[in-house]
Length: 275
Image 1 (cartoon, rainbow, N blue to C red):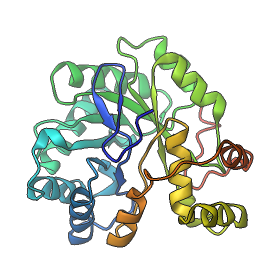
Image 2: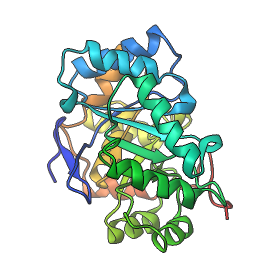
Image 3: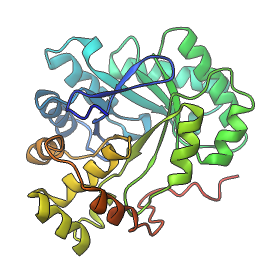
Image 4: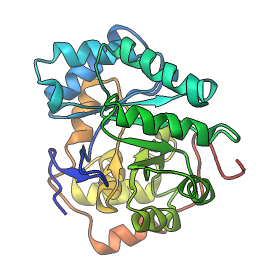
């Protein structure tokens, strides 16, 4: 597995998705988000993950334009929010996101949540957006196996990505195997547990062994499981620190130890009971 800052995952439609990205969930709109994205791009990130509900698409788009990088060198993801789900409303929502981003296309457009009764119509809309060139790849977020089973029974296009919360304290190997079998890449959001487990003494001990921070160990764990990973920060030093994860590898013993820390810890949304 190629693990460098510029390493990518080839999606099921041939599009290359950078393995490390910057998430901007809860990053304040305006200068804070714009500067965070600029710092990330200057540090070598080439993947930025936003969403309509985050309220900062305009700032992400502004930073992309100001970065001095070619548009085709930056992978931009945004997402269809729940209130916009449905066929016609999803088409309109994507146009609004593109307008706010100031972009002609996004690289990846995701259904943000498996809204019952609307997610299949939303997916039909995403298939049209893909065909129309509004996005280079389409996928889902927070979908578990039963949601994917339903979708794959109707879809003309297999999702390229499933973005789910993933870290050692929420390790879902069955879901990862399912997605691998279907050719769906998995992206890990909240890989740092929103800070809730960074002080876990087992993680701290492993981090000391490698001369790394607990955050770097959690990001590296995701990478070594073949995941795309999108840690969030608005602090320049943390953004750069989170990218410094390609100069070490976890031993098989430490990887197994981290795998054994699962406690089904959802730090955000839990889609388990969504029919």
